[in-house]
Amino acid sequence: MTPQPPIRFWRIPRSPRRHGGRSLVTVCFTLWLTVACQVTFAELPAIKVAEDGRSFVHDPGGAPFVPWGVNYDHDRDGRLLDEYWHDDWQTVVEDFREIKSLGANCVRIHLQLGKFMDEPHQPKASALRQLAKLVQLAEDTGLYLDVTGLACYHKANIPAWYDALEETQRWSAQASFWRAVASTCQDSPAIFCYDLMNEPIVGGPPGNRDWLAGEPLGGNYFVQRIALEAGGRSPQEVAEQWVKALTTAIRQEDARHLITVGVIPWAHVWPNAKPLFYSPGPARHLDFVSVHFYPQAGQVEQALAALRVYQIGKPLLVEEMFPLKCSIPELLAFVDGSRDVADGWISFYWGQPAAEYDRQTIAGSITAEWLDAFARQADSRAAK
Image 1 (cartoon, rainbow, N blue to C red):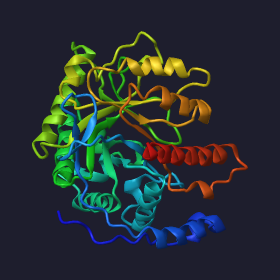
Image 2: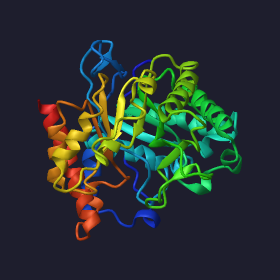
Image 3: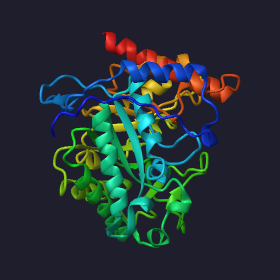
């Protein structure tokens, strides 16, 4: 790819119907960003695992790469990315600019299977075109993408045919999804990794026929079963069979980009729990470890101890974190305390700058203060 022309960070005012008026602070920031950030991003170097197998580096060059990013899973109205990126593309463009201004270098996106597949083996051409457009936006903005797939967060978007499939058929449809996504993304240096699925688990109670697990959080089902029952296999065997099937599908189209799977760190729930997807069998097919951490108030050391369970000789990414159950200083202490363990950290951005949150509310105050802290951390990291 040739270097992109200078990028003008034009920030188009959002619709008052959706977002109400914009604050004076935001308007001033918009003007500053438009004038000051006419930047050309050279072609991004690709990312690979270092020769020692324990960190990320740029390729070529070998300079260290430490992911410091955000999950961009939904907007301020709760819409998932692939529910609005066709009709509201300018919002996506603006949000990527805002994410870059926070000092992030990585964005984790979440793709719903139902938005990408018409039938078990028939991807939607329109969705793949939009994904390609998003990948180009990432290149233009100088951001890497953690592409998380197979999402079934909104039940309304799950095709009836998908839930009716038996395990092997379902895995085959998932493999078709990943072949289509990998084929679309294979040539871009902006792809940091493919995350096979958000928080997969194995099995359920006897007689269970629901592929989704747990109670919805904000109307979203984030945990998904890869098998309804083990059928005489150990959980490790099921996990390895599934991981191997999907990584093989990706490698048929894309031989170079990294592959991971974002998991619930059960060692954070039960101290004696051992990794499942990062046990020796499944882990041999994955390039690095991704875990999701929300430390409890007063239990930062316990969270750090649980994180160390996932040190298996591969790079370790904290793929989700937020002061959901602890204070902002405690979450920052978790980040600082994990620097000898983790090789990157990803938080959240929901399409709303800190200046636009209502700091008179608890949720608004926490989110705004965390975004401010996140940006300061990015500045301090860049200064070192």
